[in-house]
Image 1 (cartoon, rainbow, N blue to C red):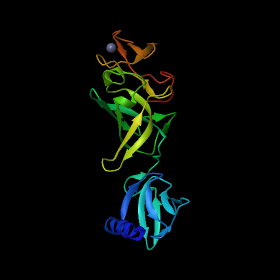
Image 2: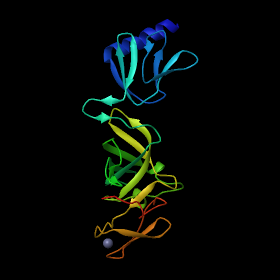
Image 3: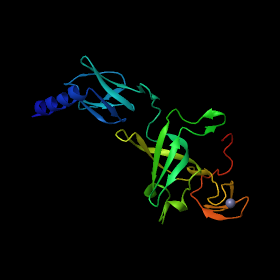
Image 4: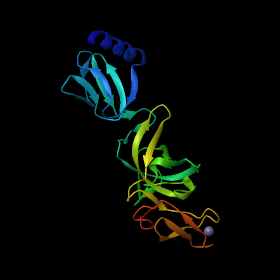
Amino acid sequence: MGTEKGLEKENVLEKENKKIVLPGDSLGTEEEFIPGYGTAVAEDGEVLSAALGEAKMIGRKMNVESEVPGMGLYPITIGTIVYGRVESESPMMALAQVGYPKVGGKRASNYSGFAGLHISRAKKGYTKSMSEVVRVGDLLRAKIVKYNARQGLIDVSTDDKHNGVILAFCSLCRQRMVKIGTDEVKCTQCENIESRKLADDYGSVEGIL
Ligand SMILES: [Zn+2]
C-alpha cells in the first residue's frame, strides 16, 4: 500500500519537477528520494520542507531552494513581520503593497508583492468593515500567516498589539493623522476623525517615507 502511495507522489514530482513549499510541508518519504538542503526528516521517515522556496528534484536528491529566479530571495516565513502601503480596501479585505516603505533607511523586506489582510485577521473582536481597520494610503505593519503560491500573495494578520496601522492618512484630504484615542485618529488639517486598528507605536516609527 505504502509503495503505491509513494509511486503516485513520485509521478507528480516528475511531472512538475518544481513546486513552491512552505516550512512543514510534506515532500514525500525517504524511500522516494534523498533529503537534500532545505529539508528535514521526521521520525517516521517523512521528508518535510524546512524553508519557503521551490522544491526541486536534482537526480535522486530533493532540495528546497529559497532563491527564485527573477524574484530574488524569499524571506517569507510564517510569523515574519512585513511593512506595506494599503493599495485597496473593500468591506472584507485590504490589499497592501509589501516591501515598501523603507524603515530606518533600510528596505523593510526583501519580499516585494501583495499582502492580503482579511477582516477576520484584522483585530480582536467584532469588526463591521475594513474601513474601521485601514484606509487606502495607510502604512501598515503586519505578520505573515500564510503564503498562497498560486496567487503569489501572502496573507497577513494585524490582530495583536504591535501590528496594525503605523501611519494613517485622512481619507478626505490625505494629510497625516494623529492618535487621539484607542484605535481613533484625527486629521492634522481638516480635523476629520476616523477609526483604525493602530499599532502600539503608532506615529513613532522612524525613518518611514
Ligand atoms: Zn483631513
